[in-house]
Length: 91
Image (cartoon, rainbow, N blue to C red; front, side, top):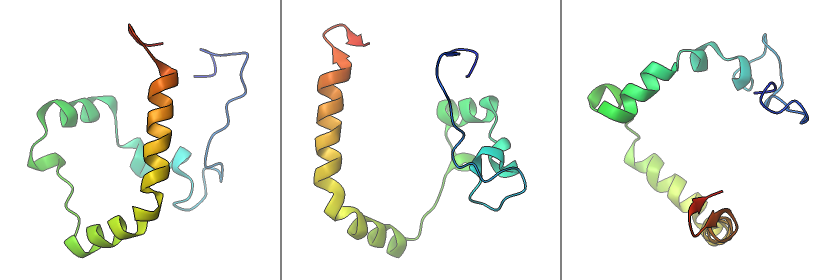
């Protein structure tokens, strides 16, 4: 990515380093297992092998916790849509 935009400073986030705990997604061996082929297969084929099941109580709790932010999310989505989408598409 740095080669694509050499004039910009790109920061890894989180930047805890290779020996860090789960807070270091930039060097996580589990995240490294998500190759482009597996991601493409999941998007194209779907199916039970790629399903993620979340307990209903957890879903409901997450939805309730996110409710105060719903208005903010809706506002930022509308602003992005107005500023990033031209009549001919994304630019």
